[in-house]
Amino acid sequence: SSEKGNYDYLMYADLDMDHPEVKQELKDWGEWYINMTGVDGFRMDAVKHIKYQYLQEWIDHLRWKTGKELFTVGEYWNYDVNQLHNFITKTSGSMSLFDAPLHMNFYN
Image (cartoon, rainbow, N blue to C red; front, side, top):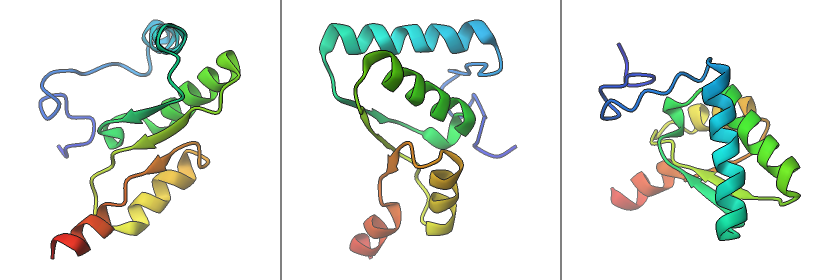
């Protein structure tokens, strides 16, 4: 098993993104959080472990419900720019990603 979708890798926090009640609860929480805090965006951790279809659905839903642009940046720790580009394409550009390849270049 790879680290993607592996709940052991994520400290046993495995959410079933195919379950309608889970998906709706996360949408409800997102709306509540935006309304309570007034945030203008999100920093999403470990997005490669979340189904990209749901990430786009979640972001689109929150943008629609709140009327906010909601800048969103995801942490997808991979040094292969092609994999990062693939993720951005699959999510229709709904979020930005941290530039892990640039980080590696600075590190080296």
